Image (cartoon, rainbow, N blue to C red):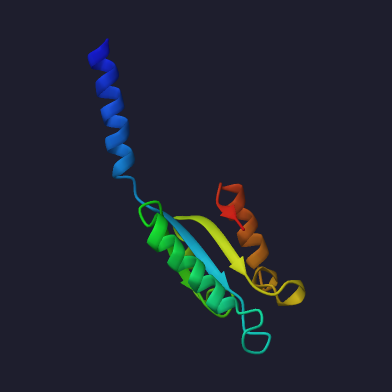
Amino acid sequence: MKKLLLLTLTLTFALGAVAKPKKVVMIAGRQSHGPLSHEHKAGIMLLAKCLQENAGDLVAPTVVLNGWPKDNNVFRDVAAVVIYSDGGGRHPALGGNNLEMLGRMMEEGVGFL
């Protein structure tokens, strides 16, 4: 029984150690204010850098600048989407069918912040 427990624990830790990092798409909104005010690009890049340096074995940030990505293939195999932007009509999720696409991703278990 002890050998079975030891084998189970060993496999659990071994499989966890080789788990592929989760892809996180991080979208920075378009520039909307002057320098040093609502710096979406700088903020999202800083957050991505912190994630890479401190949790790179768990997450793989993919940064998209200036609003919603032109190519939706960036969302392939995504675990979470982070948007840092203006709200209201300038929010990247509100253009085209972006909101519907985001809703479908969330229904499939993709996180959203």
